[in-house]
Image (tube, rainbow, N blue to C red; front, side, top):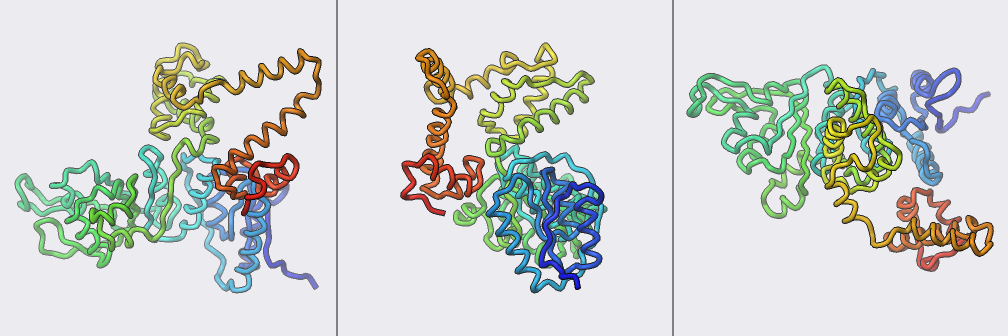
Length: 429
């Protein structure tokens, strides 16, 4: 007799049947078996497709072996109690979200897990990180995707008009109200209402919003007839709502109503791995808008851009790509083509002294002295230096230090055993 596995780990790209087809087949025949999908294609489509077809988890490569083992244990524990029917398979529309960095993979996971849900979501992140794009992806990949997605930037609406924008108004409700107007809630009925910069909402409007979220009904400004709506709320802010609650600037009960699921969007400086693909995407987009050939970043230019702080995040990168498409004279973009303020940012973020020049000087001296095998001499010193700095920044926590170095925890432990570390006696998990 054949034994049924407690869990299945499958790659998404395989000869013959691919991982998603296998997942679909397993869900149809053995829906109680949790399936973990592995993929080197760290994109939103893979994550959402995996979750929407019933995957237990999504594991992008490369992954930490400890993380994979822990995930498998969770799957086995989950299998003991699982009685749910197979998740309905649904097609997912395309999206422009680009992100291979680990922090963005967490965002993709969240979107995938919410693909069959109407639950409220709070998105937080710095200005320019793409909060509206994530909100739209949640709608696109959710059960309301065939209905309207209605955005409203709360910070862009004058306080005197915000309630009219949200709830509409009756003719004659106030000076200038010459006709009846439907608000965003009515427009979004059956779909999704995205409230951007929710932290800027006036206190009186917060009270009315809370009532709508609680009761599902409201009155237009100047109206006397109750209007019922069925709307999914996605809110976003660059502010710390907990601090606003403590300062009595944001209602605590509204915060808890909105903060059912929270998604944090990382700043661009924390996802430098994505700058190359984002730049290519934005350069191609700018070239199409201007009907010109897309620019190409030279390797040294890209490396320079990856080391900038990007305070304006993805929006700043997109604007830069538009600027360079217009201003750079040749097809290839050299560092000399970059705007002068970028050089100022580099000088503010570059420590005194150039370590690569120091390394070149050291290597030249060693070879001039007739020494050989200098790579094997330099590499352990280089790795130990980085290990010490990473452990210093994490207070000796190996798992966190490994993340900073881009290693798995096992790799860091092996390197510490090989090279030693100033912090070797104080490291911990």
